[in-house]
Picture 1 (cartoon, rainbow, N blue to C red):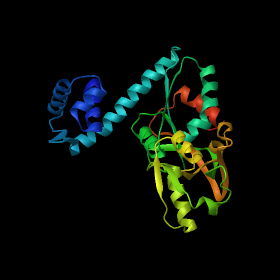
Picture 2: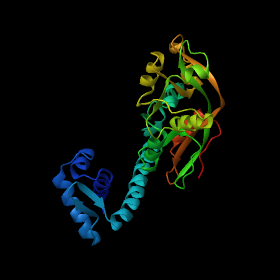
Picture 3: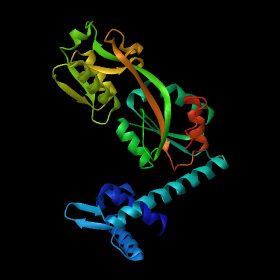
Picture 4: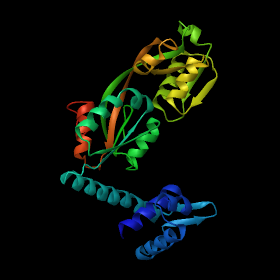
Length: 287
């Protein structure tokens, strides 16, 4: 089994589509189809069930996918380790909640880039759930998500503590007044959305209009415009450019942790260790 075939197999398994997988690995469907057939012949069993609307892994395919993920991850880690050892720098793939990426990470990224100019930084943002999945899928080396995180394939620890506040339009001065507004939340999978839902349940508030958002800037813009209120970190709400547009109201039991996480089986690169040292001196994410 060569690595190219395993990458193609993994792409088909992830997308469930030969066409989408071909695009992901920069090939053509006919090439992927031939490589998958050859892999199935080599292993003596079907890896996929071909269905009208896509492809689904067989039990044997599920087993191979687990090994393929580990083999390809180890291969990538080996390449990065060699790059580091010969001074080429390598790549550090970071994933983060939008709020953490907007407030906590920029000065750390700038400091790291100045100290390690040869390391290519890649940052993706999304919900805590999607960023955790990126770590599990080996698509991110280090992620910053709402904690605590308990998973047998993840190693993590808290690195930031955030105070949640109710972000309200300027002019709203009490929780009672804020209760007349819609609640603006991030899409499902966001740690702050889950915390918002729990907060509303504890308060026993009647149902109100809920509006979903995909970006932090879009959500805050709508708070400033008077469309609703939202539960967010104080560090996000009290940024200078929002002064005069968005205000913060304190709530009970406001503190939440942001965790740094990595895959348990991943070998921490020097770049990961050095960046983590900037985030939280003394942190190691040891397995």
